[in-house]
Length: 315
Image 1: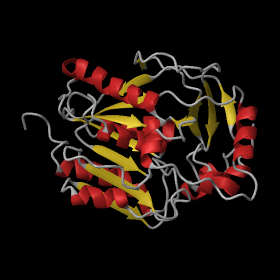
Image 2: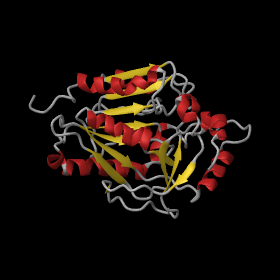
Image 3: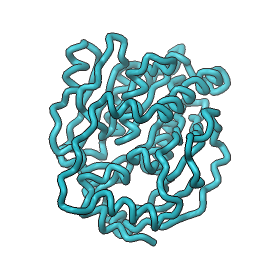
Image 4: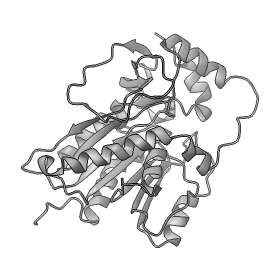
């Protein structure tokens, strides 16, 4: 087991872990040690066929922290369907992109649990396990490396520009595009309207979601959700999709923001809804909390309902 003390000390810069203590309920704080586990069975995961990550050498590995599953060294992307009961299925689908700084993936709190909640509302949900930047093969080495990266008194390096961030996630964007293609190819079998496929992402997954929504490729999401991701302007296009945003004011990774993303969506006259919660920290996801940030999912579902994406096709 690896202690999580440095997460508490360094959360303002620790995007790789995509969690902060401020985000967690009391019951989870007692489980802040990272514990290596075997790669879980994923019998319904579909390989996307985007190939192995170039240069990847370590095998995929998993650990538990805060009572939740995390993946590392994902070199082959997969998509796991969570299909709703046909009696309540409404024809809408959502690709779910967990966060973790493109070094880990919060598969449970920001993936499976979100997908289950969407499926319970009649939405076909698909958890995207996208390829990640390589990290050391063992958990001890990973933690030691993260501690070294964020230790010392030197100020953190400047945040890269949106363009620089986008350029660094080309394999992940390829995975997201392949996910949309796979869903559309199986839309009839899965009871999905190909024109009603959206995407929601968390932290780094939110960045990937924004990249997918702004890309001129074939993904073309009907709507996108940015949950505690960057809010700087990213270059909205006239055909960019409607946007839902949720962020906590006490998020240690975004202590200051000019909300450029919100302003540019409004300036382009494209629908945008923004929830700025007083408390919640970073990485609140589906963890039950006493802060109003816990309500983001209900707000997201209400927003989808308002736009008609929760209505069953044909009435």
